[in-house]
Length: 210
Picture 1: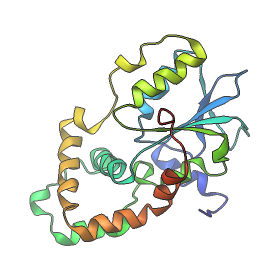
Picture 2 (picture 1 turned 180 degrees about the vertical axis):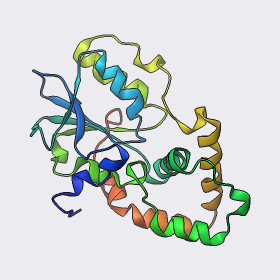
Picture 3 (picture 1 turned 90 degrees about the vertical axis):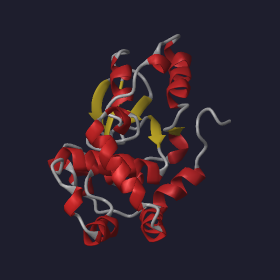
Picture 4 (picture 1 turned 60 degrees about the vertical axis):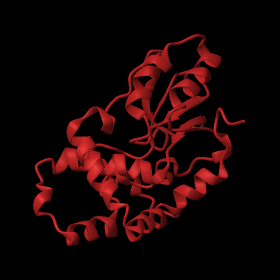
């Protein structure tokens, strides 16, 4: 994906700058943060080992990257629920019509939680990345990877953070938009919008699937 050179500050006003990552001085590894891809769970776990916050773009890090990807539709549903929770929590869907959903599915990306995943790793060589799939096996796979570096850990038993299922409001928003995806037009719009993410997912090897 070709993007403007200043795009990395696109969502700064909402709290995220592209290139955000974590690393540990003296190690050739960094973890690149992609919102809604288990980042709220992963970051505190890495801090247990003294990892610190950086930005691989502005700090000019050239390290092997740990990257967590997620099914684009699943991530968008979680992301739009997060967006609604953060900025439009009091909206009454009893008075929302078809035009509202047409607008949402026409735009699709509203903030960093609903942005293309490829943008968060812009400029990285995917051959110098270890990719994880965000799903039911992520905690186990990530824990095994960290064990190879630091020894035994308890990551697989750590509770997830800020997921839709643990918040009534987020769960309500996610269900509302999930129901809309029974409309094949909306579902196709989502998949087309995130075509670059699907291409990335199809082109890489994920840890734990070798």
